[in-house]
Each structure stands twice: as structure tokens, then as C-alpha cells.
Length: 117
Image (spheres, rainbow, N blue to C red):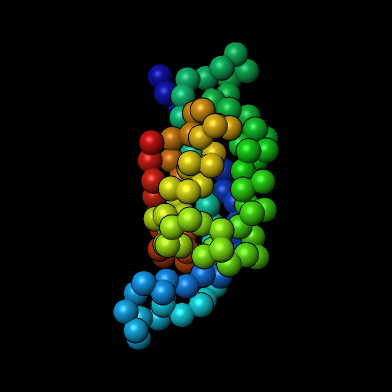
């Protein structure tokens, strides 16, 4: 049997999408209160955990620190879309969370990009 655990994190960042056409509101610099949800999937260990929530926090905190109150265009090597941000976070976390299965990035309460492994 597989189980999944998840934990949410928040950060504030700004970005622009200069590759979009003139007049598109996201072309201009703007900010979001991002919510990132990290999912880990696997069998239960001897403790009855997929993974201790503290282990997820320990892996994610340094990445959030790199994003919080930053301009994402200066951090990401690709356009700072929610989709690319989710993929970048997954790539950064994979060496630290082998059971990482999914990353959700919410730019707003109604918009989410998901990347799955």
C-alpha cells in the first residue's frame, strides 16, 4: 500500500513575464503570496510514517528562503511561470526528498500549477 503526506509552505515574491505580449497584465512586475504544497508518497516505515513532517520542513525551508521576498526572475533560470516554479522546486528538492511525488504552486487562491514525478 502507498500513502501520501503533504505539507504547505508560503512565501511572498514578485516577478514579471516579459515574453508575454504588450498589454498582458502579467508582463509587468507584480507580486503573489505563493502557497507551495509538497507531496511525498511511499510505504509506511517502522515509525508508521511515509516521512516525518519535520524532514519535509528541513528540506523545503532553504528553498523557500531563496524565494521569499525575492524577484523570481533573478532566481529561476527559466521564465518565472507557476509551472516553471513548480518544476524548479521539484528539481531542487529531489536530492533531499527521495519520496517526493508532487509539487503544487498556488499563485492565488484559485490558480495552481502542479508537477508530478
